[in-house]
Image 1: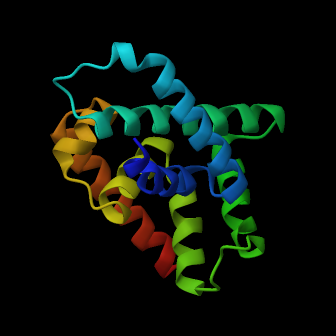
Image 2: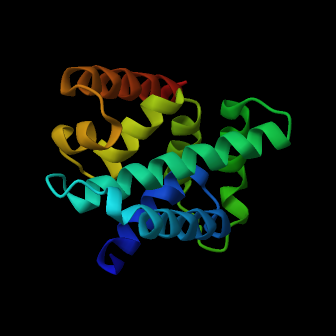
Length: 155
C-alpha cells in the first residue's frame, strides 16, 4: 500500500489544497483501507479501490469544512486555492495558481474528473472505476471542465 502513498497524497492535495489537510486525509484514507480490507473485491484493482476511498474522504473533509465555516463548498475551495500562495510547498508558479483557482470554480464532479484526467493522466476506464460513472459521462464532464477553465483563464 505504501507504493501508492505519493500518488494518493497528490490526488488528495488537489482536492483539499493544504499540505496539512492532505496529510490528515491521507492518514484517514489508510485507516479506512486497513479497516475495510476484508471488503476489498479482489477482482478490482487495489489502487482504484484506494483512490475511491481517498476521493470520498477528501470530499467528506471539504463538505465538513464548508459546513463548519458556514460557506458554500465552491466558495471554500476558491478560498483554499487563494491561500495556496502562503503554502510552504507553493513554488511561485503564477500559472499553477491561476489554474488551481480556475479548477476551484468548477462543480465538484468536474473538478474530480479534470484532476484525474489532466493532472494524474488516468485513463477514462480507471476514472470510471473510481467514480463509478460511465466513460461517456466522464468524457462529457471533462470536455465541459476544459471549456470552463479555458473561459476562466482567458477572461
